[in-house]
Amino acid sequence: MQKENHIIYGVHITDRLEKISRVQSLLTEYGCNIKTRLGLHEVSTKACSANGLLILEMFGDTAQCEQLRDKLTSLEGVEVQQMIFDHD
Image (tube, rainbow, N blue to C red; front, side, top):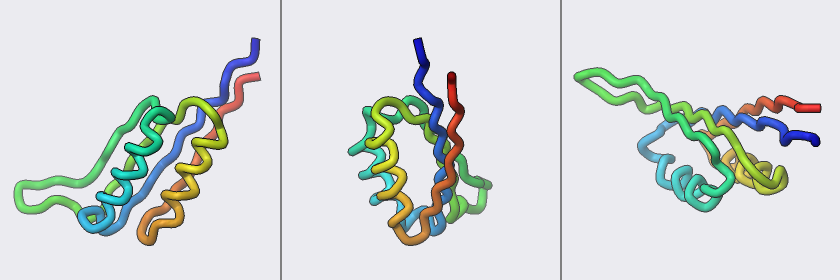
């Protein structure tokens, strides 16, 4: 029995406070395809970073996962990198 590949997306968001509402909308739309979500950004007592990084572990139909990746990539100020681990 062949296992599904692990698909991981790293999503870098610049100007996080301006872009996050559209990113969040897409994450909600594809929520059933996101198994794990981890958000990282710099924080101090004086300020919250304008940049952010999301790590997404994807689940389900590969075409759906790729749609999310493509929609995120189409947003100005959002960059997506991917890692795919095959399980033969």
